[in-house]
Image 1 (cartoon, rainbow, N blue to C red):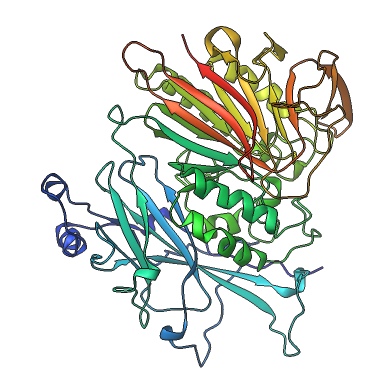
Image 2: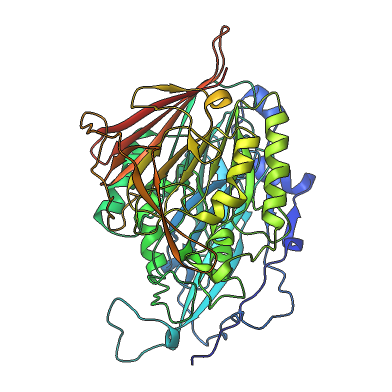
Length: 529
């Protein structure tokens, strides 16, 4: 057996809040309008990580080398943004460098040609041994024994709501100031209750390739406020079982971030973990790699991973770790020991009690309901979480896992309450929750046991369709269901157009599925009241 590497644990004690002097330095290069100048942003900076005592199953930092490439020859790549729990004021800028660098930073400003002083970034170093990998490309004759990846993250807090910021990332020897080609931008959310309508997009199971690139660039064309990725991101771990005999190539993550940089550098991507993110070489839960590569709010509890909630305007969003309730890939089954379920109920109750929240959207990897047999539906989610979705009238549940598009009729207590064809409007208060599988992000497509039926290509769809689930012991069961309303075998994403309540009209979400060439596959309106 290969030796299990060790990995540094990133303590939340590494967070620093920049004080008055740091804030002044940060805003010194900004051209702030009058109102914004009074509310100048004061960044929260992620510094060099505080390394707790290494624990078994965690990779170590690389040994220092005698020679290193000059910083001027190293270029950042793979930029990706994420919102904090308050997207009107919090953004995380993340990227990679090909080798160790000194003093990495982000510059940020209100004009692309006038960026502020450097804001330090945290470096998270991930070491992967070649001994437990199966590289997809040929290795050189002089082979290294490890792959070392350098991920950098800078969290910027106290931004001005509803404002476009420009930024560039660099390090000692490479300062992007004055190079407009290195500058990207993002926009903070409006303060709650002050914005107009907005759009967000979602898919899962992307991988790397031309279909994956096409769906990613479709995001850019739709120009959403943010994008939800429902797990199975790079398929660097192609096995997805969460076991150490899975085929794995750590450098496929480099390709994933390069592929998505043109989009993710400008549109925040909020990710959930899938079974292919269980990389057991990095710690007991296999999420050490995720924690190195991404900075999500992860505010369920200290050191939660992929379990968090946040708010964008009138929509409350909840990301869940479906591996915790997954019977058919049980490597992390019950790993939170009920903590996630307890937290979920508390968060759903708080969101539903908030008068400023019209809609609750839950996103996760595994399918609570699906008739695609390749991965089936997840009985654990039906048993643990669906009753909570019913109780707190969750409006929309988005998932991936099955590489198809499928939308259910509104469901309550496991059964459809009514038929909802493309173009219909559903009311979650009386009809129940709508479940959407959007796993056509780019990975190889799966199949349905029944014919496709989608917008403009409707087929007879009154007969029950078989749903396959695995029970806790791993045995498969087949149940006939009637709620599978729209099925499409192809690559696509979900776009959700949110309209707040205006002039006495109810708030609504138009949920539509769009193929990589812009063709509409499905459309349904979710409207409360």
